[in-house]
Amino acid sequence: MVDRKQELVEEMKTEKHDAIVLSSADEKTVQKNFAASLKASPLHDDEILANLGLYLTSKNLSRILFFYEIYKKIVHNHGIIAEFGVRWGQTLSVLSALRGILEPFNRHRKIVGFDTFEGFRGMSEKDGDACKCKDGSFSVTPDYEEYLDKLLHMQEQLNPMSHLKRYELVKGDAIQTVPEYLRRHPETIISLAIFDFDIYAPTRAALEAVRPHLCKGSILVFDELCDDIFPGETVALMETFGLNNVRVRRLPMTSRISYLEIE
Ligand SMILES: C[S@@+](CC[C@H](N)C(=O)[O-])C[C@H]1O[C@@H](n2cnc3c(N)ncnc32)[C@H](O)[C@@H]1O
Image (tube, rainbow, N blue to C red):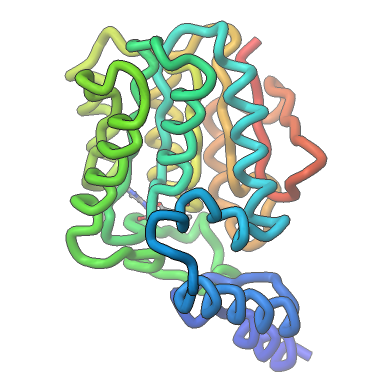
């Protein structure tokens, strides 16, 4: 029985990294074919960006729509957006585009992303072993943060006030970098904090560090609450804010991602 469970977990591992993806074998085949079709796209170079929707699946689109709904909730709240766990940076880029659409002249809505850009750091027993990850899982390619920096710069160039840089990438272990950033920027108010480190130690450190910088109405998004593969994120929230004190909400279009509002 245990062996079969282990076999199933092995079958669910993706080829890219160690994480478990709960797609069926058939779904994985179609996803692979989609990716191959994107790489072999016959579209003209100057039409690719305008036609990226060709390759958006319902699952991937739902995540973008989630952030659209969340962004609308903060447009009347002052403060920056911080993402804890950036990886390839799609969420940062989407948020930058949404800022260009929803509040192009809000120069205070800085978007800040924290990541080692070298994968997980600080896995502990509170993360269990279901995820089959280790320190270094979810790493990106060398110097990826430089590539992402260029993309975020281009996003800003296509929107108003492009002479002002309104994003920042903070590289390193969040246990140190988040408190350091907030010491350097005591003026920070956080209107939206997105927790996506997946694991306990940096999530707990970031939750503790941001708490004095939240206001009523600030929104905290979590990618792995109540998730049996990554239990550490829930434990970090339980130990800092206490689950009894918060209302954890979700939107019907996405399964894993949830949010709460400071009341
Ligand atoms: C699931 S990925 C984030 C995905 C991203 N939010 C997105 O929407 O595509 C988790 C990220 O957390 C980062 N991470 C894990 N432990 C960290 C730590 N101690 N300090 C900084 N980043 C960490 C990893 O490097 C990884 O990129």
